[in-house]
Image (tube, rainbow, N blue to C red; front, side):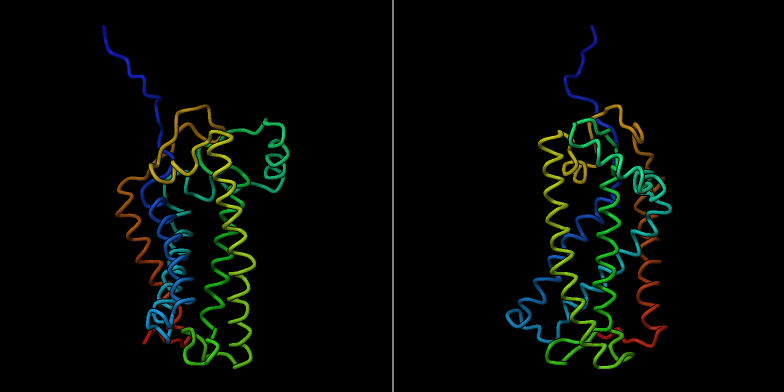
Length: 242
């Protein structure tokens, strides 16, 4: 008599490049904050590490946009970005416990992804034109605008981080924890392992992972770096971090 496994069947959700993007972005955001708040303590008064983090974050954002066009199925924007009507309908179904289960991003999760990417892009974009409090160093494009615009860019760079990104990050973490432990939808585990228990999901039964995802992701990363760094140089900026 054949043996049967007691382990529940799992299905693919997130490919490896998407998971690496997620956790690398988290690490870079933390590193960017630490490298700014403790710049003097680590002997980096000219914010070399902070500026390098900013360029890396902008490159990752562009990478995610590219991956959202030709990555695996659950990573594609066309697969999870939904209309405002669908978002509202999903939100209305949550209190009664009638919400549908999604393999990838649910409608509200998709909205959070887009909002976080836009917020990070804004922070990084203003950082390109900002100067620090002592005017010792500025972003790669700070010479292209006036001093008053440098100051405004720096202020917006800080304000969006403190008053938009941090609350969004706290909300994102809280919701993921609630989904994991209350709704029994292992969102956090899936972003680590790339898998979820098989279930009748609304969007798809399993992710369609692209062929050679790491090679495709590497090509996307080179293209993203060329867009960010090449764009800065084409605009007349400087990439020297010293």
